[in-house]
Amino acid sequence: MDTIMLDLKSKSRNEIDKMHWAVKRRLKKEYCLLIRNQMKLNSIKKANDSDVFQLYITCYRKRKLDYDNMVGGLKQFIDALWYEGFIFDDDEKHCARMTFNQIKASQDRIGITRKIV
Image 1 (cartoon, rainbow, N blue to C red):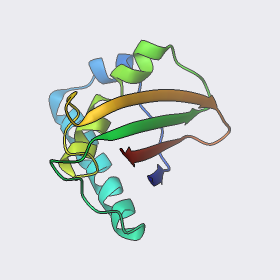
Image 2 (image 1 turned 90 degrees about the vertical axis):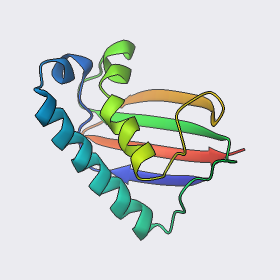
Image 3 (image 1 turned 90 degrees about the horizontal axis):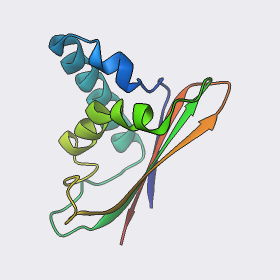
Image 4 (image 1 turned 60 degrees about the vertical axis):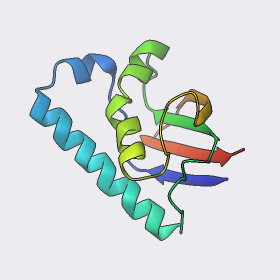
């Protein structure tokens, strides 16, 4: 099981929808940089085409969001996970399960766990 923690606040779907496309692109690049660094620091290898995995994403937030708003706001984040090779693809063939969770906390963070099955 591979786990990384990122010290940043997850965006809501409402925030993402109001962004210009160039701002969304910069957000994805920021996610990519943070994920790449954590993968190097934790010696996490890139996923293969033959890997089937379960992905658990936990958002630690000061204020909880409704489920759809939270999941919709993580689109650029999931794309960055794919771009950096943490996941091979987010389709049904490679991702047996994708679970989103939210915990009320004093510090905003995102935790990601990849379990290859």
